[in-house]
Length: 160
Image (cartoon, rainbow, N blue to C red):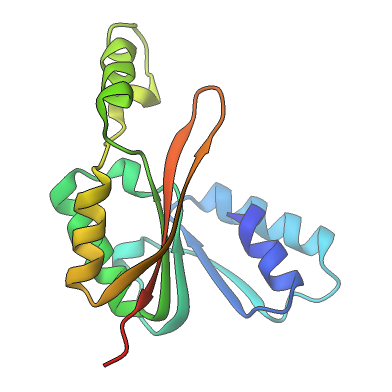
């Protein structure tokens, strides 16, 4: 969580960052304290996204939707859309033939693999949820490493 929130705060943005993991929040606080001269515009909280309230110019939700089945992802995106005044940036594991096959192969291996618990989402489904909540897609892209793939969407609120 600090890998994005700290550079944003350093660039002058007012940042509120939350994670359900107390350990992640603690590490981010430590990293921010060590790398920033001033942390007045940066706050961290141990909080479930479902309990988040308030209003934010931009809401960024990275690497979270992988933990939600489609119906819960729909609810989460709709909730985050209510919090975003202007922009919503989401990442999710894309559901397509290749990644679905890789997930199935991963399920064949024993042990506590994160791959087998990952929920994949169709890009069209995520876009439909955003549009239903009054957002339009501005930019899209893929991020990938050897064993990590995610789709990134930037959406802005439609003007009335």
